Image (cartoon, rainbow, N blue to C red; front, top):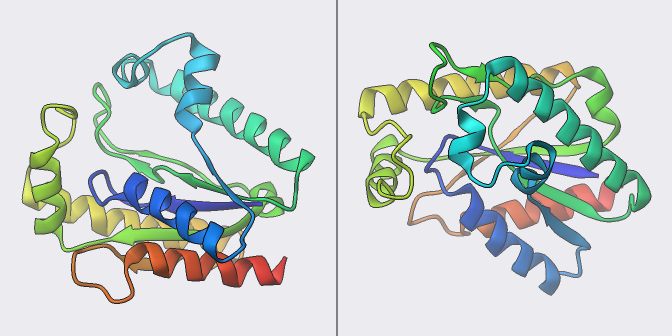
Length: 197
């Protein structure tokens, strides 16, 4: 079963899911991280995120559908493992797209989605993180007003998307002063979901 972790670019998804995986081992939760990008690279034959981003909108949507099919096939072979995938429900930083892309959840997704968690943070903190990574990720907007809009749109869209499959997303703050930390809160969320399996 899958737990999807979303949030705008720069909110800290990759770092938090990696920390959560370590915590899950301590709590005896059978969990693995899923990297959809690796599957996208295999499907297209490209080797960088930049190459993926310049594909047409229809090609990207088709690829994401094929990636999800492959992930679901893997999951069906081992339904006892919780697979945590971090990614986007809305894509704001893709060149050549005048508006954002939305990752639509379909009713059949409910069969394999255990939960949805969204990382959020004070926009100024996310902006600082984006500036720190600007050399590695020049595609991300470093504009506070745009970032505020992105995060608000993501929160609204995820709530609507989750409702389609009768779920409520879990919103987790990832700033610097949370106690418990964002990773601990995500681990707790996953542990609670695991007991319901």
